[in-house]
Length: 227
Image 1: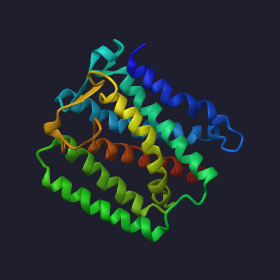
Image 2 (image 1 turned 90 degrees about the vertical axis):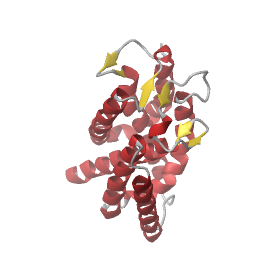
Image 3 (image 1 turned 30 degrees about the vertical axis):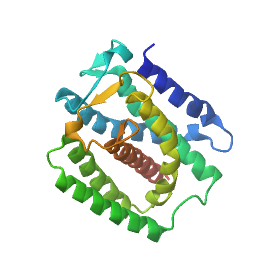
């Protein structure tokens, strides 16, 4: 079994087993959650395929299986299912067991405006960096949508994402070479800000934030439509 596959199995195994917790009953979210994760994943996978093709990032075959689809390892496809599932599970756990773990609406709205301005400036000042431009543009769209989202998901997500960052750093660190001689996923750092936390490009944090927030908002929208 490949190292990348082991990382994914470890990441999702406990959230999956605890999905049947009597108080949380996360499995009841599957009919809303799985379509949301898949829809958002398809968007990010298109970008993943393109940036892999032009060499913005790539994969070390030493840590992969031999199965590829559109030049992406099968593990990378599964990443977009396993990691959002595990992360949104943690988001919901915090929501159920700590219902007051959220920001006041006025604070979250000011934060969103602040982050929007910062992302816009970073984008404008780094138009020559493909990964930076790509993820900042996505962030601007997602944060704008969240600002006008009536469910105010962003107020809670600002808090839960701080907790999600703990397993995020462990998983992304494992993928970017924090624990191995060579990284599972490598980057051309001329196409990003070349600022890293341990071995993780700072853009990856924005990548994770937007992917999870978009999936949660879409999940909530599906629930509201049925409700």
